[in-house]
Image (tube, rainbow, N blue to C red):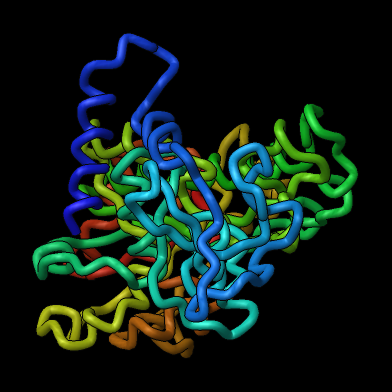
Length: 354
């Protein structure tokens, strides 16, 4: 509309000419949209509470703060408050996942501010199958995926729920450190093998803004929760360094099923074992089986645990692996040990390789 275009032009001019360093584009938008902000009751949009008192606009700008419709920009625009479940912001949809928990399919999703710039926003959409990538995003590569169980004591939410505002949630940070270590090792393996890392699903017991809120949550989240990758990693830095990675739901994307190279794709499971030498006892104490005592799938009477059904990766991870690798292995030895698996589309590292 003509008033809408006029508002955008004034907003743009304010951003371009402002000398106030603390004002960003959002700040200028707020200033201009609130100019003479007044409630707009009508027969079509009656006076009705559409927000809780905690969420309603400031009464400094609106005489009747429960109204759903307003005139703004000196009365030239009409604006309205949209229902959060059908028009969720980034936190509601990607963090607390309130619409999904209540069985509501949104009309539109606003990927609001997160922690990794544009790459982080694309990643959030990709994690939920809401981003349309070109076909080459799914083809031409080989992948390394991580499959592990986070220790139960790390995902207990009780400690996080008791953290006062401004305090450090040490239990949550220990959980994050465990997962960061797994991903770090996975990235090192993927780089050594010239493969693309498929990130694991990440678990959090605290909102990313834990220092600004009490009890680690804004109130609408349940703990623990599956958190976006940008809650843990700076994906914009990864992208600028050309690190090859994919979202944790990549292998579940239905588009893989129609691509010829994925119809015949196979995966191989890999586990670590304790090598001979001075460090063996420490590796065994950490739960690794001695390499000399391991029997890979496919050896002897056991069945080959290599499958062309990629959809079974998460549900059919064998207790025994197709390949055991000594912990502490070098890049050169890693490539040598896996030279016979170069053709495999997806290498699945189970429980990490130290």
